[in-house]
Amino acid sequence: MPELEHPVSTGLVSLRPTQPAVDAVQRRTMTVLVIAQIIGTVGVGVAPSIGVLLAGAVTDSEAWAGLARTGSTLGAALVGLPLGNLAARRGRRVALATGWWTAAAGGLLLVAAAQWSMIVPLFAGLLLIGVGLAVSLQSRFAATDPRAAAPEGPLAGPGGLGGHARLRARPEPRRAR
Image (cartoon, rainbow, N blue to C red; front, side, top):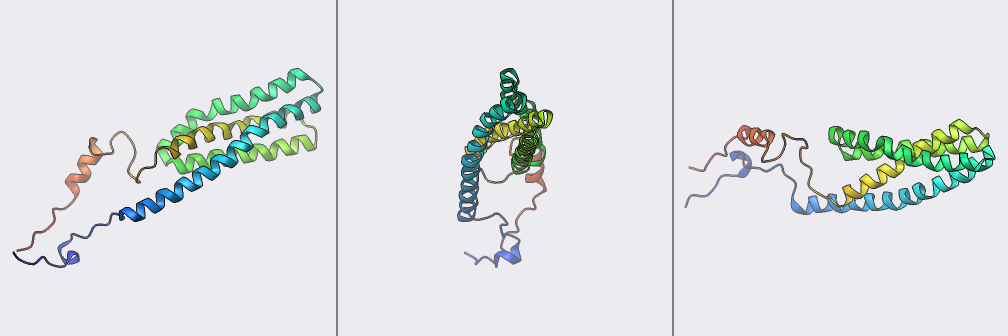
């Protein structure tokens, strides 16, 4: 049996990461998602309750206070699909980061509105904080789906046209003579 040439000279070097490297990345990703989920859920859970109290104090009306809670729920409902589309187009990391930063901006707006007793920014802040609820739910799905990085979309994967094109475009390895 002839001895094989060096893998570099034959073009057989794999650029795929090793399984321990993939496992390390998935472990780190899970850790980040769990920490973000804990902190985010606490923030998203507490903020609407505080918002209701602030709206009641600023407006002196229980009806407006109830509407404040509706604002945060409405924020989650309005951005659920756009964040999902963003995740499909640009990846989960971009969608989750965008949502968390939007919710953080809503928290800052809520604090400013409370400081200066402004009603409209208070509701806008609660609407933006509601984005955090949608992101919190999306990050739960991301945490339960740890997979190796792969192209996404309807044409990707082994069964799609993209997977077939990738397989056909890959050069055949040279055999040792």
